[in-house]
Image (cartoon, rainbow, N blue to C red; front, top):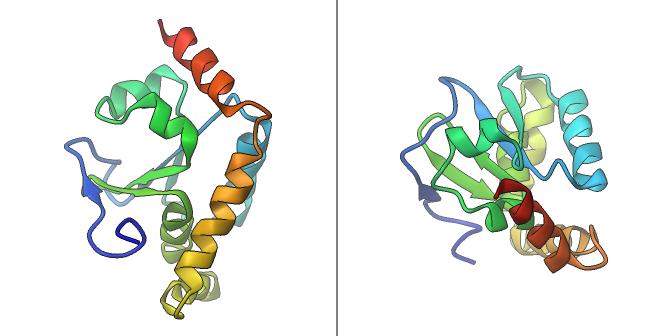
Length: 143
């Protein structure tokens, strides 16, 4: 539960001031569809979507391992805080303007964070028939 609550990991790299960098697996069709949905849902104009496989993401966030980035969605804020998986989705919701931000408060309903994390992992685990092959292929592209 440590990654669901408490202080997130911090890295030296940061998103642009006032922005959230959203790193997703651009080689994954499901991930690309989710990224497009995030952009349609976003009313904050504070999201910078980056393909984790791309040179821009790797240059801006060299401290993050590609294998981790391909395993789950990562969000990095302008203070270098790293949110992963369901917590990353919650952070995106928290930054929305108006009523859309209210969905983020579900995180504090007892049990919700755990259920959200389990559901995120279940969906993310079905992205590829062989997730290890996808990570190996992406790693090979960078070499």
